[in-house]
Picture 1: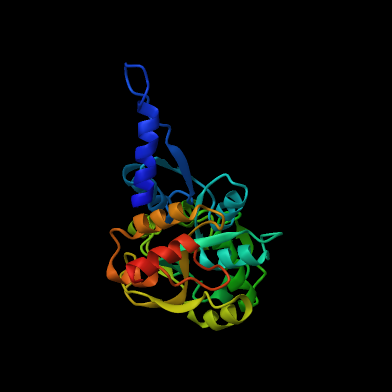
Picture 2: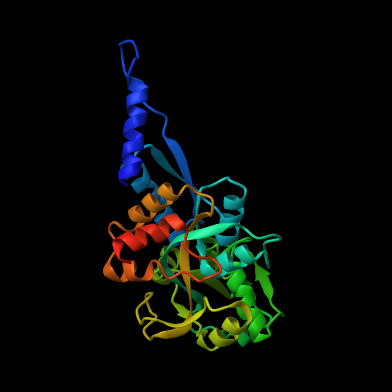
Length: 306
């Protein structure tokens, strides 16, 4: 981050020199807004932590967050210039750069890093009659907030499974967990890291089960691209879930506008990975080709040997 540091030092000098005595004026920090997600999801915590690191460790900048419904809205806000950084599922990012599905025109985004994988989770009450996607027929089902990545993947699972006769409820993960607990829905989809706080809290109060989704990986890859992978949620992911569950995973990306200054993009990438594990560093530059890395991020990985 040497160039950012030098730039900040120059700004400090300009602000302080020739002030004519008295207290030195402090330079205004440029805000960097991060579009995150809803309460109870991992995006909210991840974005807040990144914003704090920006403020603490990136001279001249102040990190802020904007709560949203999720990936689709995050990328729409990035396109409109309302935020400078967005967290998104890879499948939604792919839709955005190709201008399809929820996006009426391409969104010029590039990734700084792949962060963690999300798992498509279909949560129901333990002992319920919902044991497969097909069992959702006629049921009340949370499919995620409007303009969320969860809604995208929920509809895609239902599409490849040929299920349309159900009562959709557009609820975020915290709302879905509450609705399942009080019996106003029968199951809900969630796409997020494991464990997710809202599902963890639910499982402590209401025994839950996870419905296997692994057999839908191949048709989803065939129809919407290679961001979908077969994955196993480990036993014990949530209280009472005592056996592994086969499902579908999707990478998560930190993305920015492709026109972001290259030095800033490089510094943000470095900040993202400063405290990363070896596994996280190895995963970070693996971004699907239509999205691609920002040139500043590429420069960071090249110099870091990533």
